[in-house]
Length: 269
Image (cartoon, rainbow, N blue to C red):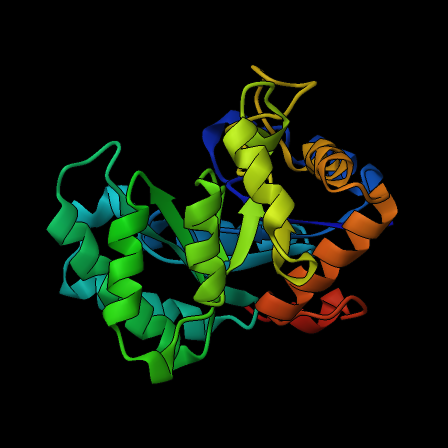
């Protein structure tokens, strides 16, 4: 059995001095690949250094919607340069809209559109953060040029069944986090049940949202196994089948193969 954690933030200070132990645990949990998202391009050098240490790690670069107020021409020019600089970059992200924690809605939309254009230009998928903004995001996507439709992932998804269908209809993959293991997360659990098998992904979004039975603790990549177990239970399939399908899906959207040599991605600094 193999698992892929499609969204991590292991550059955060909460892991300082523990990364070797962290990697031992994710390998024991059969996590064979991880996708590390940026919240700001200034993080890229640190995440790149982590990928040099841990060959399972792949990279995404982008500006989080809660950082949209820091966007300027230099930042937005830096993103495509960084993305093109390293073959381990598999997505632009995380980008999106967050109307729960910030009120600069128009600025967030502008920055999202600019980063979406970068992804299209580079032929990369996007990793989308969407919180309390599903309708606005859907409207943005529907008003863009359909001939250049974005590919990507709705990450850490917590939307309703109706909202889930919106983004499935737009061609997106849907990625579920530890929220799906929470007792009262019935909306998220119902959404997980309706996602087609070939569009389903799993993630930890660590260090946030540790799943049951680790809820309340700091999250980490090895805990993706608990998310996989819950997803399999809710969908009425075996853990092995769920793991195989989500691993295949991650390979498909992010463009890496199951048998790809990690050494091929190592490069000179």
